[in-house]
Amino acid sequence: QVQLVESGGALVQAGGSLRLSCAASGLSFSSYTMGWFRQAPGKEREFVAAIGWSGSSTRYADSVKGRFTVSRDSAKKTVYLQVNSLKPEDTAVYYCAARNLLTTTTVASGYDYWGQGTQVTISS
Image 1: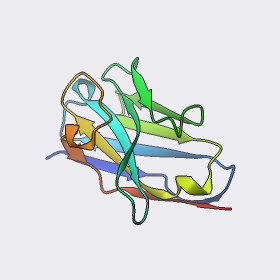
Image 2 (image 1 turned 45 degrees about the vertical axis):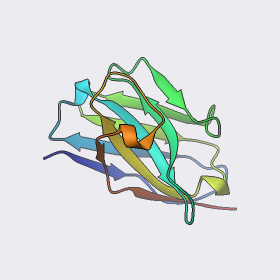
Image 3 (image 1 turned 135 degrees about the vertical axis):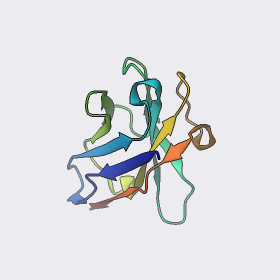
């Protein structure tokens, strides 16, 4: 079955950096668009970034542009989210998602599979 396993979350100080990883299995990775979402306590899940099947197409939420970078390694079946210049408002559970279409989307319901999430906490 399809599995998405996130890792890399941690407690870091404001201004710090992390690299989140999402290892995929059970799917034809190179055929899937991958996305990152996050959910803070008491808030709805929100789009963070997405990357197309080839890696040449990326999208970002306005709140993370210039600070976050999404990438993928098809050989490792892994998608990454490099998060820099972290702010306390970036605190959330970060989820990886996979979409069996060639186009990216910012809509959560457009993704077919989800990981269990990894906690990112930023201290001020």
